[in-house]
Length: 167
Ligand code: SF4
Ligand code: SF4
Image (cartoon, rainbow, N blue to C red; front, side, top):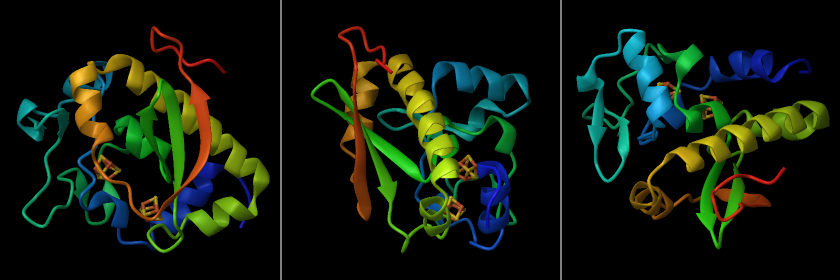
């Protein structure tokens, strides 16, 4: 399967059952919250539990997941856009991880296409750096403490003292 990352993700994610939307609790930058509010997402869709995130239902499924699809796909949270890459910040570095194939069926397709992998890696690095810049340090500390099992470290990107990402 070759082509754009978007086409690849659309095809593979449709068969996955939205595995990554269970227990996701995706954080949101203030800018992303504003966009979602402008597009009619009610404030009750958000909660603050150490950081601002989207509510989940009683099974842990993000409430924006309807029939296995994201109903805010075009404006979804930064960490959802970055998938299957995820992140932490340590020692003033943005550390990027790639999920294991066992938890994301998209990963083997990504690994098989160097161009598509690189495109999504750059997308993820940029949007996660922007997210990190936008979050108060107390929220970032809470997000950093969330374990990310079944992932591999794939890159470390220095952040300047002001939080800006150095390409
Ligand atoms: S777990 Fe992977 S394949 Fe499944 S919906 Fe999420 S990104 Fe797509
Ligand atoms: S915002 Fe969309 S992609 Fe992200 S966890 Fe919720 S349903 Fe899944």
